[in-house]
Length: 130
Image (tube, rainbow, N blue to C red; front, side, top):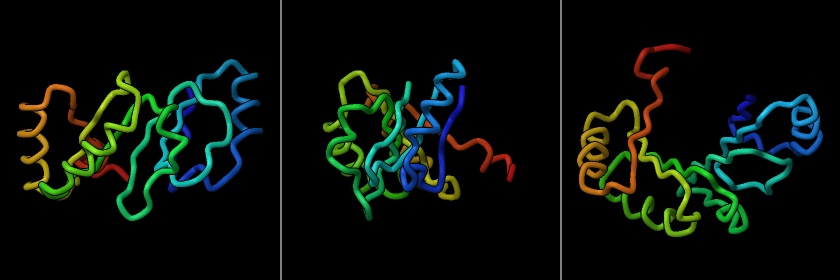
């Protein structure tokens, strides 16, 4: 399996790369903000939308996973509005801003009372791996 992530990988045309990787028999996962046109063929798309540069409307239907970063309570409103745009089968993850203890507690509390969401953590940041 190959995970294509960024920065923002869709700033490039990924058509040739994904064709070659599929030809080699590899599964391809994409992690994107969705703010650039989707190019290439993927087996799994993880969308991490940004408030300051929202995803293009046509990517939502193709999303397998929605990952929303939470820093403050108002971010849950954004997360819920984005969740309404993805397929019901999409995995929904709330990811606390890694250096915000308050954000972490908000996410944990929210997930406990909203079972359609899961907690997503960037473990490498907590462990200090660069």
